[in-house]
Length: 244
Image (cartoon, rainbow, N blue to C red; front, side, top):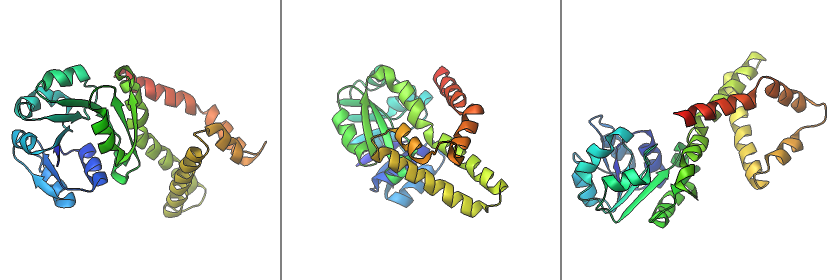
């Protein structure tokens, strides 16, 4: 059974995507109990008990809690997968020296609907993590030095895309559509565009040219986006995340 230490947003997304009972703990919020009421399993009072009973321990707590949690779970955990941002393999192995397998993973929240992507740092145990996270989306294995930019690329994307949809809907409302209709159109168009890009081998230029007639309405819209700095804004957002 999978054990989740920490029952925040990422833990919920993974548990919903896996669709199987889990063991879960929290830091007193009560979210572990609510989580297992939805997906099945058991909320435990002790991280040590969870580590003893779980086949795989997935660390979903706050990064600053690493040492505290490891002091409780470390003596018992055999296979540990961390989804903690900014926490290196060296730090994880230092915290869990008795574990047979220690893996660093960075999933994103679309795992909830099995459309996620998970980046794994190269190292022992990635096959275990590949199978586990492969159930909820795509898996990419990278050198650890690239995990930061990978997380900044895909971890933040759901929020960026949600903001883009909000802006698109607001623009449509300004010109007469209801919020309900605008939301359906914008979200479905986005989902279709993503599927088309994947179908075209991730060739975004081909997809863009396929809908853009010379001098047409899409060309004018794209020019406005460029003029108002869409690329500059995305680069600035990446810089902010990486600087942190």
